[in-house]
Length: 400
Image (cartoon, rainbow, N blue to C red; front, side, top):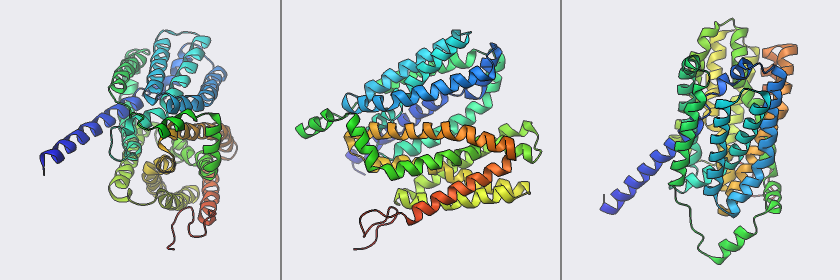
C-alpha cells in the first residue's frame, strides 16, 4: 500500500466514524420519545390535547419540509441543517421549562420546523464525507438501531431520576451535533452550468421531480401506510399471546438488533445489486411474514416470522432513499429527499387512525391481515409495472 493510499484510507475511516457519530447523536436526541406521552400527562394534558400536539407536529413538518429542501439545494444544505439544529435545540429548551398545553404546542412546532430543516439536507451534507453516497443511508440505519437500543435501556431510569432530565441530555447532544455539522465542508460550485442549475431550483422543480418519480412515491406511500405499523403495534401483538409486559423492552432490543443485522447484511452482501430488484424481493418476504403472523396461533412460529420481518425492514426502508438518490441530480437531492419525507408523513397521518380502528374493532390479528393484503397489492403492482422503455422494467434491465 502506497503512502497516498494509506492516507486516503485513514481519511475515509475518520470520515466514516464522523458520520456514525453524527447520525447516532441525531437519532439519540429523540431518545425521550417513549416517555413524551407520560411527560405531557404529568402536567395534566389530556389525550385529546396530546393528539392535537402530535397532529400539529405532523402538519407543521409537511408545510416546512419541501421549502427547506429547496432552500438547501439553492443556498446551502449546511445552513439548512444548522437552522434546523438550532430550532430543535430551542424546542428542547422549551420542553425543559414548559408546563402548559400552549407552551408544549409551540415547542412541537419548533421541533417540526427543525426536523424539516435537518431532514434531506443532513444526508446530502454527510455525503460529502463518504466515497459512496448510498452509505449514508446504511450508516444512518445502523446508528438508529443502536440509539434505539441504548435509549430504550436508559430512558426509564433517567425519567425516574427527574422527568425533565431527558430533555436536558437531548439539549446538550443537539448543541454538540450542531458543532459537528459546522465542521463539515460543503462542495463548491465550479461551473456556470452548475450555477444555472442551482438558480433554477424552485417549487416548479419540486413538482417536476415528483412527477418524474411519481410511481416510486406512490409505492412509498402505500408501503408506509401498512408496513411500519407491524412494528409500531407489536406490544399489542405480544398481549395477544399473553406475554408479560416486563419482557417487551427485551424483545424490542432483540428486534432492533435483528434490524441492524439486516442493515449490515445488506451493506456487506447486497449493496452491489439494483435497489429496486431488492425492493421487489423485500415485498415478497414481508408478504409471507405478515401472512404467517395473521394466521399463526403459535407464539414461536409468529416470532420467527416477525424476526424475518425485522431483518428485511433493516434495509427495506433505506432502499427507497438509495433508489431516489441514485435517480436524482446532485443539485436537487435535498428537495427530493424532502418530498420523500412528506410522503412518509402523509402515510402515517392516513395509517394511524385506520390501523387503530382495525385493532379496536377487529383485533390485532386483523391488522396483520390488513398488512398482508396491502403488501400483496403493492407486490403485484411492482411485479408487473413497466416503464416506457421496452428493454427495461422498473426492477430489472433486460439485455438489448
